[in-house]
Image 1 (tube, rainbow, N blue to C red):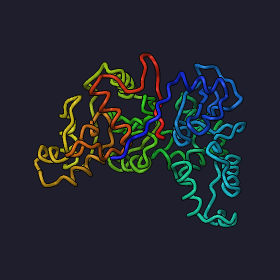
Image 2: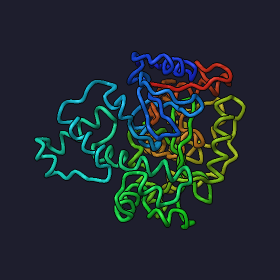
Image 3: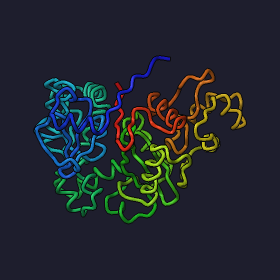
Image 4: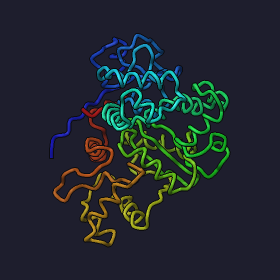
Length: 367
């Protein structure tokens, strides 16, 4: 197994870099300003109050958390200036956030849809279409999350009409904005900050049913699958289970909690449910192999099927799929990245997250 290289940036270090406007950190992390709803490079000349900023490790995380790119420092160019055609697309979307560039319009620019998709996937971890959706709805997501009225969310986010906003909102979140506050049968999602990076959490009135790292490549696919499985809208908001999850996760990462008390509302196939049930029986601080997990499920020859079910777990950490390792003791098969798996196991072994000082937040960035 190759060595895992993990860069742990403390909040103190990121605050120092931002205060010094250190351009060497551009592209390593991003600074989001809660009061303005924008995100910046560490070298940006803006000077928000310290208590109003939060940090992310990628553009995708910033967009999904509801932030828009700063027009002063252009954080989308932090990893290198985009080629002229990509910059043209970015400028058009930023100028008209509710507009949708069709394939014919892309070709008029001399860009094929396939080329745009590949370039945005490579540089921002998402397709061009997904990037447009994130940018278009970032303001709306932020405003609704802060309790704004639907009218404010519509017009403050650059939408020209309620119908355009409803269409975009429904396509992205799976339900109309009005019903999202009235319909009791829904999955409520919110962003949670953790020492291993932001996570997207979801809950119904029956319990927590989603917890994934926002940089996981399958995140958007998993959200769509969740909508299908629960046959309901997925909407941003607050929920008592999500608030409890925030508290219990903090205690877990502080080494003060071994078992979670939250009810789970995961929903898979009968086989997946049996695998996930066995995962929850693995004690804190212990690991088992995929072979052993298959035996516990009652199908000792179904190691591959067990591994697939393990990978389809949508509730990271609470359903501890990170406690399953290779027969030879190697770390294999973790959707959040093997570097996170290693850190979680080390936390459970020692009661302390490696690289994290007491009373100090950390952000993990994969090198």
